[in-house]
Length: 199
Length: 346
Ligand code: HEM
Image (cartoon, helix red, strand yellow):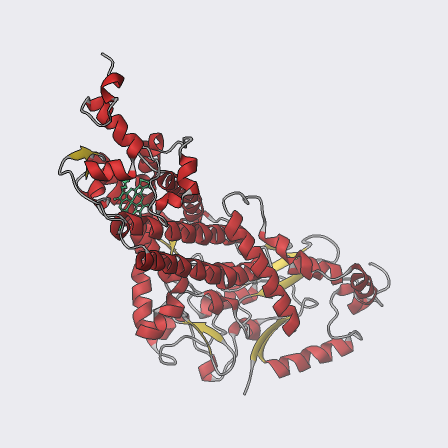
């Protein structure tokens, strides 16, 4: 069984935000909400790095652990989804999530929240696959059509990879070998130099 | 991995216990502090740095370093926040478990008190009454009680319902209950705040400690021995309740106001901290209110009348609030004690 994963290769991401836009369009994401974002570290400085981040579909998801109504579930593919009919918009998943993935539309009095919205790995929600209700609540269910998340499919430099964890790992390992580094090292220095001195 | 987890949950337990105990005064604590123990040793860092010059860089990212993001939103420029892990461990761990044990302990203790000591009965009634609480006093008391109980029940539902109620009624039904609980909790809060402020202001004058309160504490209000204990308008136990309510009430309200207004974009660490203070102070209030509700109803005969009709039997006043009783009698000029007459100055 596949175990779906995202991986963003910081060596390749050029902060074009194409993934953000692709996601927003494909899933008709509500105004004011972005399920994915690109964060640039050391912006404008030599060696700046960008990474595209969204829900990482954790195996032991903190959002699910703190949810007062237990509205999260993990699919057979290891994708973490949630049921908006059960969600009460308390925001606890946002406090627990390391990646800031859960998003909330603003709603009525006290500046409280609407129901949580997040990246679904383009796999919809608990509604029937491909149904109108699913499309409206969760966005396009591409996985049920045998497609991968659009953010990764659209990525111009193939920095953002999505798919079965083993295959994603193989691709990244191959890249790392070509860069002649260990697969768990990062950064421009190791990609283009021997790592002993700064640029 | 496993022992690492156990060590972390042990750390969380100690920290959690500490937060529950010192919640009102520990305002300066930050959640990130607790992750300091998980840092790699200097030696490890040095070795890593020689192999991977960016190790330090990514370590900072792991602990909430900020960058730039074209996407706007609360903390959108932070790649990874690590306070959430601490918050999750404390909330799902000690805050819940210690809280549950505390509440169970209070219920058990009150049950034992009732079984072994029973209701503190009035030996007789005089049939004459003394005015104790004005209509306004009673209005704010019951307003406070209704709003507090609504908040307590819905709040406990959000913390424990998933483990207690959901297995009984199912996910959908519990989801429906929770969907009502959350707005009820939100909308009850302004009423609670208003009634709390009125109560704290209106009743402060009854709650300054006096020298004979020490004796009340020494004899635990006479609840174990049925000894006579001195008390003014409020006894020492009631005074402690009043001050506890004032302080813990302030904490529960302040932390609750953060949690109530997420779209003012408070940082996640503010919300995590607020959540823990909110849980600790709320559970403290619930525990104390259980004691209060017990003593005001089945614990003592005649006490409930004070808050319902506003008047108490003279015998109740003499038995439970003798100093106040003497003052009333003296001011009325009617005989209460042999020397009451001489105290009457014209
Ligand atoms: C069913 C629930 C409750 C009952 C039956 C009840 C009953 C009473 C009674 C009879 C008194 C008067 C005691 C006396 O005259 O000496 C009283 C006082 C008081 N009650 Fe309650 N009460 C309840 C809930 C609450 C709650 C939830 C709160 C606060 C959140 C509260 C706060 C107070 C305070 C501050 C006083 C003033 C005396 C003191 O400081 O202890 N009560 N209550």
